Amino acid sequence: MLAEHPSPDCRARVSAETSAGRSLCQYRDMIARIWRGAVRAEDAAAYVSYVQETGIDGYQNTPGNRGAWALSRVEGDRAEIVTVSFWESRAAIEAFAGPDISRAVFYPEDDRYLIDRDLTAQHYDVADPS
Image (cartoon, rainbow, N blue to C red):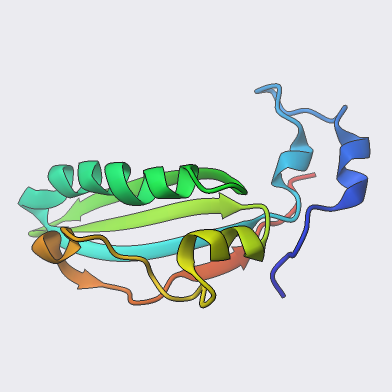
């Protein structure tokens, strides 16, 4: 079951820090949202830039988002694009994606680039790193 709210005992653990100086608690009870698509290899850089301006910015500007990244890898004539975002709750994801959080969100120029796409996003509970 996906986490609904940050754990209340996490705030008591703020003294536990990573080498980056961040509280380990920031990772507790988060939900990861992952989406995959593919573009022609020659369109990879342009599409990643477009995803940054649309999807990643959309994630990061939604309250409850805890970070978002676009990943890419070229294999032959195709490039796989993966977006990974982290959320504090299902409600935060709904604020971005709507009530059906499994449904992928697309933008006007996606059809111009995408040669393959997942129509759904996958969600995972993030394991406690401690």
